[in-house]
Image (cartoon, rainbow over all chains, first blue to last red; front, side):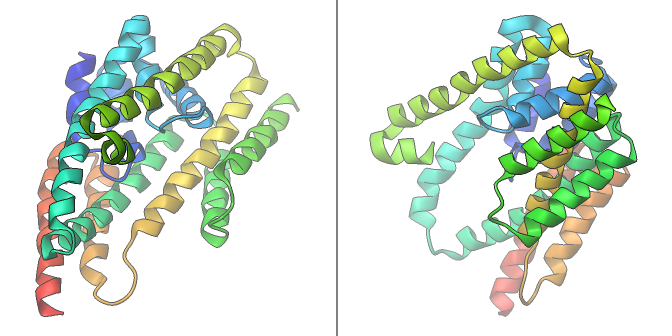
Length: 170
Length: 116
């Protein structure tokens, strides 16, 4: 089952794994019930705070569903197909460099990837139990990153975590 | 991965992928294991909410940066809006949406190229 869900997503992971979040949330929480909404939001946070590619979330869901084997299966299912595509594309790209197609594919993929990221973020916000505060924090973080692009994401992760952790203690 | 391919060919690409994936895999599952043991304290939930908020902010910022700038950006903007509408608002499954919009978007870029 893990393979059936993750392989098609893999082939569409344009613009990095975050573009998959909307569909992942829908399938994993809604259709298959592998995690509760609360767990999905928490596992998302863990996967983003840890080193490594952002879609480590898939490994965590696989692990929740089927233990270590599930973690490995989900990771391979999500990475292998898109890796093969990237590998093939990298070889073709060299040959096509500078051609009209090269530029058109790049320019054509960007707006679709951009359009997937927004619903992806909103899907996670919707399942998280943080309420209005977490929506506001996400928007502030986005504004900060757009205003100061060199701001390291880990700084934001750490301050966001500290802020909400303290607020929860109160 | 593309670096691995350039340096060592196919074997380099495979090694790059395995190294990149399975190291973090252990770390992240270890963290999740810790989470299931102690995750029910409200402070931990708060910390995770804060990290999630920052990570989602990063996702939004990345999306906005991908939007085209300069001339001839009306078409790509329309494609981005259509994607948000289909996936985010109508909650259609992502795969058919992407399969329809990507060729459309590439075609649009080709047309713009020819007219420019």
